[in-house]
Length: 140
Image 1 (cartoon, rainbow, N blue to C red):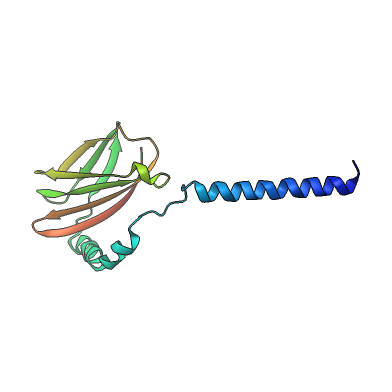
Image 2 (image 1 turned 120 degrees about the vertical axis):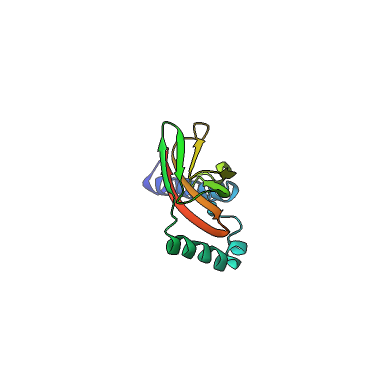
């Protein structure tokens, strides 16, 4: 085999490789957006902004910590009612939304059933009729 055939063979192999990778990327939908409904959510961003402003004005940011496979939330006042939204940056299929009600400032949630790794926690709740939203990055 002379050098001309080797060059053609290498270029042909490279082209087949690039086509294979392109087909794989198109057929496998692992490159997802963080939110599938990002456009609809952007229409209601004024509400989210107001919730975050309430959080800053009332200094109501909850304390979040993970100890021994348990998530501990400490709110500034009680009672609290809302929803915990767990988002997995690497796999949106693991995203979970859990409602909660807390009659005292402390709320505990076992997280041993969650896959270990990085999570984004969004807490949306109400205290005394005032809505709040808080975002937290977690690793457990």
